[in-house]
Image (cartoon, rainbow, N blue to C red):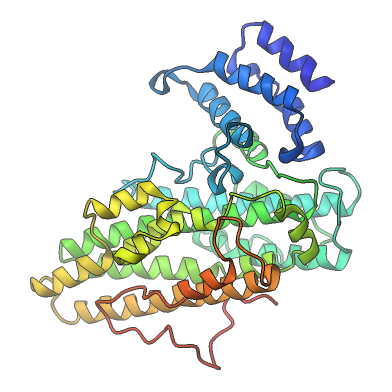
Length: 427
């Protein structure tokens, strides 16, 4: 087999990270799905990891890339498969464990642009796969191909999902809203990664467990949401810093930006809702142990809004993200804490305090709407089945909907209303 030959040759040579046979290894993972990769290949990859291991401080970019890829590829072999390794978040440089950060980005403009670029690239890659599969030019993930009508809908929703990020990047109006007769090349070009290894990283971050077509879309949309939540967490950290200094204007701007990001991401849910339920249930059988309950980015966002109560911190949701739990136990402040302290200490004079309070309510409403939409989609896909993160599934999501986003401001957004906006509800 090609992968055995190339990998054995690499192991018997110098074993340089920049010459690792990624294409051969990835092709085999894609041919059968990560869950079904032959143990002979996994053993060779484990040997490659042992042979190439160097202290983290001494790793160059190629060594780090190889180490992160092998860690993602060998998660099931190691018995540590989870949501972060399933989505290869470390390869994408998104919060995945030890890298949970407690301070806002030093360059907020650059950080925002980098995340927007990544989100567009993830969506564009998903659309590229849909179009190449529909044209019959790829045999990747061949089971349960969607109809051409579904592909056309996915393309339309994908462009809509990427458009807010393009607007934020100053590229509004540069991508036509066309049907699936077009290719997503323009999206890729607009969001090109300045790092020459960027395209390789994107390829390596696609490690589906099965050969069902829709798992590609599932992975890319979840990666896009992780990118979104990581960005929102950064905005909330900056909001805490601004409130602690009594700066109402920057706090309002950061909260508003976070709210707009979350609200504008609604089409991602609509895109995900085009998944075929039977296809989802097929590959989901092999994702046991990986669940969004393990999302560090989401828990960072939640805990930066408001310090969770003891019962929430002691729940399975937080025990599966120990770095975030430790952050809370260490007393790191939330927006709720900072706002309450700023009001108590007289740091927010009118009308600044009122503006902050109003924006906190608006942000809370956006979070609650996201939770409702998430619950509706999960109910449709899961039904009464339990979750893959060792929870009871949709009842868990229903309970999460009632958790207040903030407590320092009046919040009536949690009460369902027949006139709720559809937001990101599936179309």
